[in-house]
Image 1: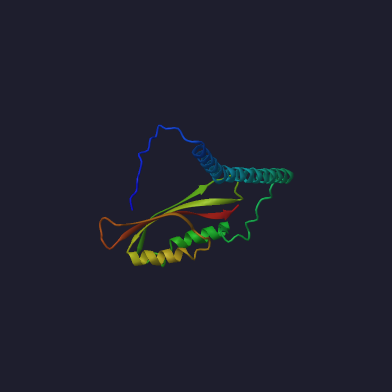
Image 2: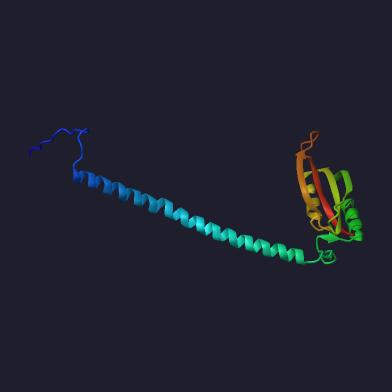
Length: 181
């Protein structure tokens, strides 16, 4: 089979049939692009506008509802398990330093401070507790902390080996208690 290929001249003019085919191909490509890129974006835009209107309506309704409500009542802390009484705080502080609980541990430092927040219906007491002892005794003491009369809310906890003795660790616990006013 013998193929006779002629050399293409890119400078020659297109005949009428070729021009119609070329324009039809461009039109189909443009319509395909428009349908696949532009139409979905318009649909997404209208959906977003509807959602925005819904959210704005809900927001306005909530603003009116909040404005209609009276000043909030103070919270009743008597049934809250995270908030203790001043007597329970004294018992908790006594429990932290009991010799039976400190077996194998030395209490290096114990600091208690008041943290005042005007909007809270209770007092917050901050505590910094520094202990030194063997790892197992520290673990038992931490188990004891889980059973305090008022829950200790731990904000930070660090443990490091004691520089002087390899079998001893130093633990620093920072946290707080919530006590009713």
